[in-house]
Figure 1 (cartoon, rainbow over the protein chains, first blue to last red):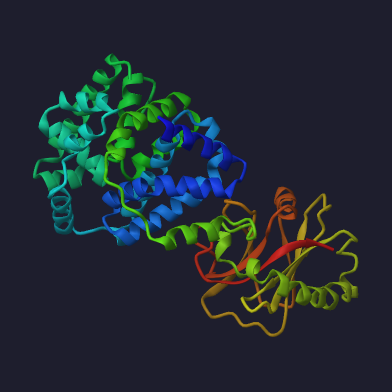
Figure 2: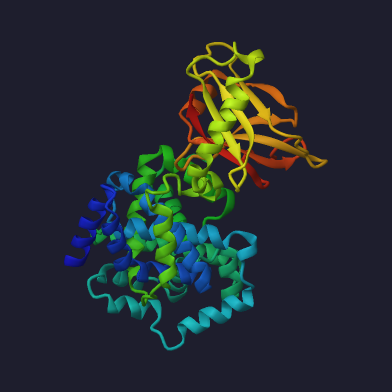
Length: 186
Length: 237
């Protein structure tokens, strides 16, 4: 895990206002974080705006990071996802549902699905195993919500199911996931 | 809703992290997060649990301009370059302003005999200028006032206010903190605004002040909504 060790070091230097360390942190992590933002806001220029806001936010709040009990990448991903979710919920940034269906289909084309992609990340088998125990519908609704930032009602329209069904899939899926991860000691 | 059950907390945290919690529900949860360490731990745990989903995505390299914009905003050469303050001209014009400010201080503060009792030796002043560094409004106060502190506001020249609008004065605390309203002003040459004692204390430590154009009656949101015409740094004289 030398990469994440280095990211820990970079974060520690950022706390001391080391801008070179921050630039290096950006260089190492911005590609992944932009991918997270792009899935949610669905436009590259918007995703880059979200990324910019997020990194300014990260720099401003890095002294508080020591109080957070999570890995740097988890903390930064949460900041980017929150910004992206705020962004898509402003009315002027909503994409029409047809566009959304098309984009989700485009991402599915030629690329591995979430399940397959997970298998590629060899050191994170636990979540993969636990997601594998969910029903296909539960897994799909959870993955769509996480990757694309879809609300319950957007999921209902995308998956062509009643709202109540979607809510149940998500809730039962998360409950099962939690049980599985806890018994695995994650 | 009561949130004392660990299972309910965990599920709510999960939906929050997943992103399916919207609108008021999301706002309420974020409020709870500030005061409930157990809920924070649940949120952290779910962020860690679901993290492999994020790291499994293929990377997209951002355009070079993204880093340049970030760098411009975090550079300590522009001390208040974050958030709302970044949009204000007074950081960019601060050096040009100091010469103009000196002239204004002489003209409007030192040489106003009627007001000499108002300004003690260690007064504070903000000279608010437009984006060309031309001064338009000064605000002065005594940081030592104990009871009923007042701001003295002077409007230069023959200012005109568009019908149906108001001029609102804002304290800019600095950093990430949002502007705080000090009240509305008129186009009168000299006017006084009463402010609470704690505001006086904050104002004396603030980065500066600004004036925005708002609908009649003032900003409906508690934050500046219209264009910021003038802004300036707080200096002691």
